[in-house]
Amino acid sequence: MRMKLTAQQIVEKDFKKSMKGYNIDEVDTFLNIIIEDYEVFEQQLNLLKEENERLKQELAEAQNRRPTATQPIASNTNVDILRRLSNLEKHVFGSKLSE
Image (tube, rainbow, N blue to C red; front, side):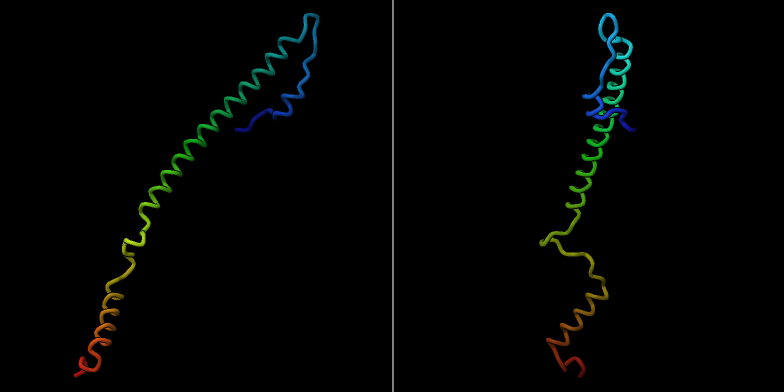
């Protein structure tokens, strides 16, 4: 979806004059191009607004799923927990465990 005109082209457009003024067909053709461009612009704008809203929603959902400081991180496996428990027992009970 490429726009056919730039703002500069619209500003610089010079219509040929006919006996009664500007050539009506030339002006109508030019205005039709402008209308088509603005329709494309409006479609692109609507698509971008929809995408923006979708991305905002995804971001909010991702932030809600992210663990906070008060939520425990669920990355600890049973092996990690058992290893920590074993180290704690060795520290608390010391050599009494080996007896």
